[in-house]
Each structure stands twice: as structure tokens, then as C-alpha cells.
Image 1 (cartoon, rainbow, N blue to C red):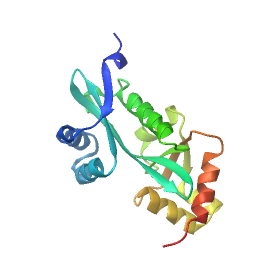
Image 2: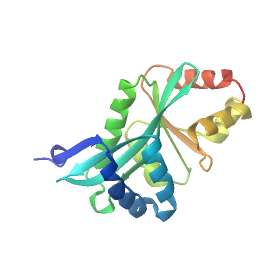
Image 3: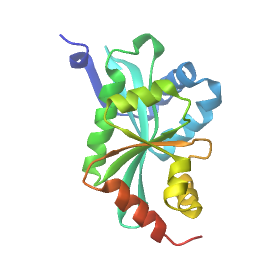
Image 4: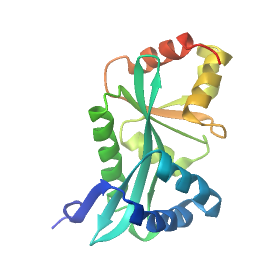
Length: 182
């Protein structure tokens, strides 16, 4: 039986929070604990179980920009002892499946440009990169600020995205341009 056959991906329940936070601290450090906990209650969290034990999690939310829907990934993390076993890939596929079900045209994740491991992971799964500085040059600063606020990407400088339908990225930026300022 393959490793993937023994993994169950499901929606997280209240009782899963403690293990999700343990994995978050092991993977990202204690500085992310509060944000992961807040996101657990405010967004959708999926967990991956291996032999009845939570081995990883993914957190994401559906966002609207005008008529455009995007799914933004906040976190994907796998217990360090179980990394490189396909669990992260299974979680990402589950997020993408949820995005399709929710009518999203694109899945996005933001990160620091220096984050080599996540950049490699998402690139391997067909995600393309767009630097915030390129977005600002191609469009305008106001659109970049709308994007940063929408995605809550205040410390990041790289957008990775996967289009689920043709021309999704161009349509997304078009909708952002048209959003009313607050």
C-alpha cells in the first residue's frame, strides 16, 4: 500500500487545533502560532491524517475581488518527521479541489522571495511566480496595495498563483483595478 493510500485528508474539527499548532510551531517557529490559531477559526483548515495521527494541515480562504473569486492559501505544513512523503502535495491538491468547488478561478499564495523550499514546492505543482515589484511596474502602486490588503500579505514580496481557468490572472488584476477605494 502506497503512502498516499494511507493518508486521509479531511476538514479540521475543534479537537484538531492542538495538533495543528504543534505542527505549525515545529515547521514555522513559535512566532506563527498565534496567526495559525486565528486562521484556524477564521478560514478553512484541512488536516491530513496518517495512521490516525494528524501529519499536516492546510489553511486557506475564499476571497472576492469584484466578481472574481480566488482561493488564498495561508499555510501548508507537514510534521518535519513526515515531510517529503507526499502529504504536502495531497493537501495542496485538496485545496485546489476545494477552490474548484467554491467557484474560484485561481489559487494564490504569497511568501518572501527568499523562501526557497516553498517556492520550489509550489513551482513543482504548476504555480507561477510574480514579484510584487513587477506587479507595481506593470499595473500601478494602488493595485499592488489592494492586492496586499486583500491577501493580508504585509511582509511578503512574491505572489505564486495557479490559474484554474484561462486568463485568470489578467481578469483578477482587472477586477482589482476596478475596486472602490476605502
